[in-house]
Image (cartoon, rainbow, N blue to C red; front, side, top):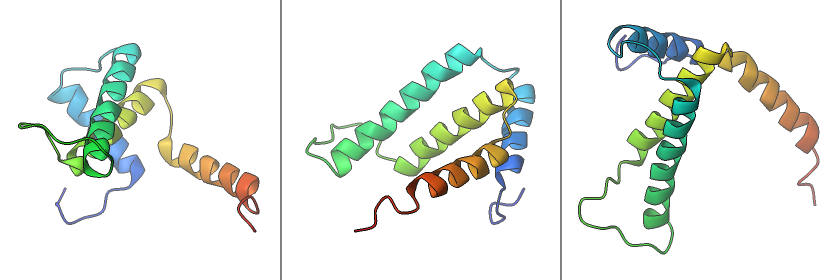
Length: 108
């Protein structure tokens, strides 16, 4: 897949599955993946706190927000794959839920 082409959520789930099944030699357990997801979200939080908050970076800190967000997405896709969730359908349903719930929530 070319670096310039867009990837759908479905394609991303497939790419992650293929990578894990071949290069990665299989999925970690769902609970391990949940722990990895928490770790990756923590890395995003650390970068955000240092870049936009009051904390100061230390020498050697990773500050690649895009890479850390991609790690969060990767593990999320892996968890969806191993639990049988179609993230495209789940995202559509979530957008519908939020739209219905919040359509006038922020009106002033």
